[in-house]
View (cartoon, rainbow, N blue to C red):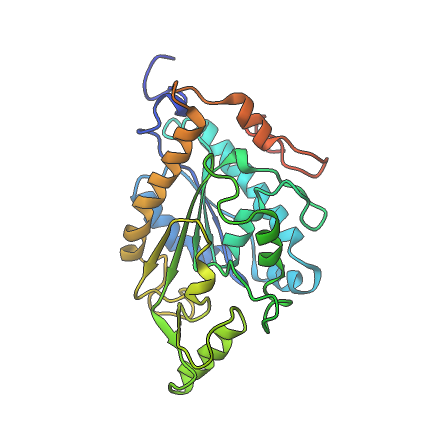
Length: 301
């Protein structure tokens, strides 16, 4: 049985394994909002989907207390997803593909940080095969109106895990939208959106800014990271008729997300087709008692 290709570990069949997915939701969201996305991922061959247990009250508390507890919950969900991957014949224990929507994409990046974030150190890049961000406000103007209230976490991430920080062993894909244009000279809605966008990123005076209605496109794309720009996606299902998790949009970004994930697996496997166990352990070894256990150390506790 051990020689069966279905039971072989992931590094012996990179082109055949399927990713277990962790979904990290956005600011003020709750897990039920991502049930439709989970269903679509199952229909596209994903063996398991974990939705991080982040609820609206958690985000409300984070406004006052910081997002350390949010990151910790996402980290525990990553442990659950890793355990499912280890138990899945389809995944063969492969690192997880993380999909972060809105603020969840920034939290996904923080999970790879070696430095402690609000006294919590994750060092979890060994567990993450790829990070796909959907409308995530990655880049904030440090002097913008929303920098202190909404952008502090992103500013921290850009200092400590900038761009494709964990590449090539972790893949990156940023998905943004130019569907909703803010304009200082437009109608009332366009002017309101323009004011919001300009509180996130700096822009030329008088110029229009495209985005998804919440995240301007200029903030959603990380320098040096592959990106996909959608043309009719709004930020979230609760405020837009169409959003990143609709079937037609998933069919645009999901195939490339899987390829980015596979490219990272190939980087880990090396030319000889074997996983770089030493490198994997080094990438995931915790530095404090509050860190996640390394990839391959067993089920989450």
